[in-house]
Each structure stands twice: as structure tokens, then as C-alpha cells.
Image 1 (cartoon, rainbow, N blue to C red):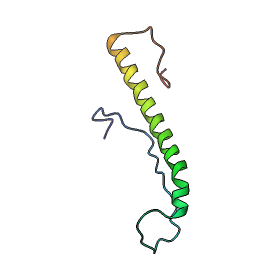
Image 2: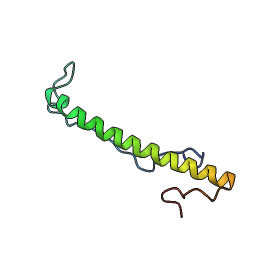
Image 3: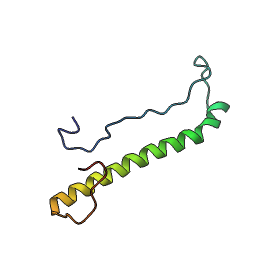
Image 4: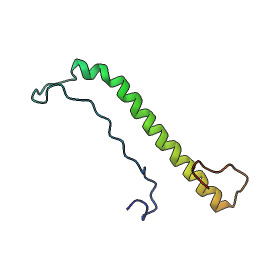
Length: 80
């Protein structure tokens, strides 16, 4: 659908999660294990978003070059 509407959208969706230690316990705040795992999860999320944004920028640059007829710039990654 995104392609049909010419909307840039990731071809791969990543879901990052932390395992629940006790799914039957409801509490306020984070458990100690989640608190410890959170920095690594945030790093992985930032890397995934950074990669996605980089791919979008490359795609946008390639489209601009195509529109403007610029053959001087390097091709975007994955562009033949």
C-alpha cells in the first residue's frame, strides 16, 4: 500500500522487546531485569532507526538526482 501511494516505508519491520519475568504480576515501574536490559534495547532501537533514516535519505537523494538529471553524484546504495 505504501508503495502504491509513493510513501517511503521500511521493507523490514523490527520489533524489539524485553522478556517479561512474571506475566501475572502487575506493578508500577520497571523490574530490575528490565531496567538493566533497557540501555542495550535503546541502543538497538537507535541503530535500527538510524539505518532506516539513512536508507530513506539515500532514496530521496537518488530521486532528486533522477529528477534533476544529475549523473555526477554517486549512486545510492542498492541502485544499479
